Amino acid sequence: MANPYVFIVGCPRSGTTLFRHIVDAHPRITITPEAHWIPRFFEERRGLTPEGMVTADLFHQLLENPKFGHFRISREELLTLMPNGQPMSYASFVSGVFDQYGKAQGKALVGNKTPDSARKIRTLHTLWPEARFVHMIRDGRDVALSFMNWSRVLQKKPGNFPTWKEDPVSTAALWWELNVRCGRKASEWLEPKLYYEIRYESLIANPAAECAALCDFLGLPYDDNMLRFYEGRNGSTPNKTADPAWRPITAGLRDWRTQMPPADVERFEAVVGGLLDELGYPCVVPRPGSESLEGASRIRNLLAQKLHRLALPKRPIQAAQ
Image (cartoon, rainbow, N blue to C red; front, side, top):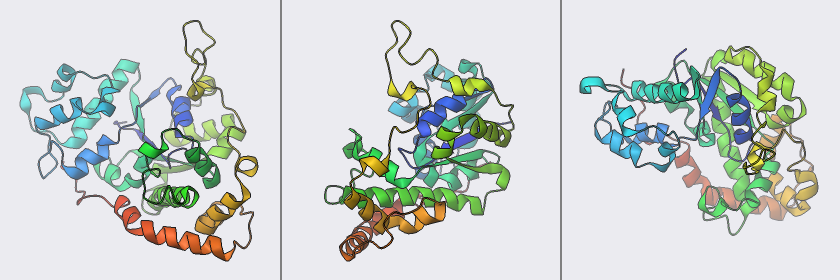
């Protein structure tokens, strides 16, 4: 049972933060903060030799990385991972980081939730061949609605794409499609015991059943603490700040059927109607108009090269042993 034990992935704004809280409430497993640096440092060989072995510069790069700061691991604790400066592979080093995080949380099993890692599954699998992947999928129209109401979207993808200002709906649709297809592609080459899909809608509608099924995939006993993840965190306790991320599982927080303008629904379905149908999310516009179809084609062509680059590793991904 080596760490990282599981990676939770999915298109951003698909409910992965809620899912992280639920899994982290299990008494035997904890989930680290988001860590885009894990695959990025390896692919770009930051602080590593060309073969993927750790160098002293990695410590500096990690300690300067704001996301790593959320792990609350000190420089001294990092140094203990390389006693006597012995050579160490990146995979072994990061496993040690996860072990330290788990120890601080009092749990042996440690996973990670980073939505964008849906596009990095092959890199992560190369590093940790036994790690499991849980892919959260949500109706893309609700994901797009969430993007368009997100105050930070202009600093994040897809809000910083050049097409966002002109057509945020189509841009969000393509971003959702890229992440979902990258995640699902992994199911074609990962063993079934390593890949699991869960639908946000099913989790909200049947939380106990979905959590029990997830525990079965993870090889863990079901624990109903998972459904009470919010207790003591929702602002009802003195000196606690209410945080929407810690509210109980709640249906209807986002509903494209009532909150998304019909023209936006048509535009979204014109772009990715095929994937909606493939996933079992029925389209409500059987034949989008020619203007919507032409707009969808134009936005897709404008973003094609950028999205293609984002779906590929930056360099060959052979891990050092």
